Length: 367
Image (tube, rainbow, N blue to C red; front, top):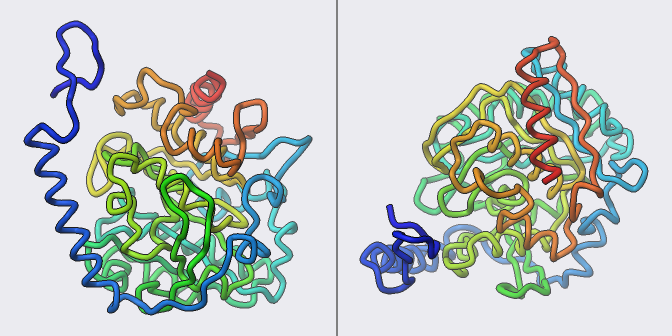
């Protein structure tokens, strides 16, 4: 494989001139045409709103993060085998559901249902179920579970069925939502690569949004956790590889200017540590993350991936240097460094492996 640096003996890839890059460009052009053709059949547009108007409910950055202590964004990491207890413990460690005032409120849970492959390609259905149950226990009036699968991966409903997500949501009393069947709201943003984002109307129809990604690597976007998970709530024509394939990671970050989740819960029961987004090497990490800060949660997730030592893009760099994170920091979407966040961890079964993992994670996020 050709290296992308100027080290002795390496071959620098000149974008636009290699056969691989040429083929990728043609492929992306085909995807662009397909997205344009599918657009009219994948939901109509609703009202246009400015970023200011859309953010009356979903304020960006840490200013609206209810999970802050001593001026620092909290991230909880909980390990164990008892999933219901892990989910509830992680949330309690950052302040519980209280700050969200859930009584009688409608809540959208946004998992990763990128395709039909089971976790860790997609969010673990058991985690989705437990989150929905916990929300109801805390007084939520109605819980919805919604996403839109990738362009070439078929209908979201079919993928939810095949992954077990549909049954898990319904068993917990949640209503499944397939964003392609609904309208889109145009949100104006002030990005470098994007000035407008078409967001599912469901981000504005509900009172609260819980972001529920899986922790995994991604060959093109570097990784997929909290920031990347929002891509599934945007119109197909605005997939990062169609907007600007040479700045995929930066586009992902800019899309997040259009919304702010009230809570992020990252599924780390099984973590993809190499490859992705469709298939890759996985490890049974047995953990759950919770935070109100997308950047802080992503950095901890990246440190977990790095700890397994298999993802080459992270081996010699800090999680803070990943493209999505760097651009998100520039945009003020959350913590800018380790001094602005606080990682709290607990193992429910006293696992030495978890304690060792957390030691590595704390070291990596401090670098």
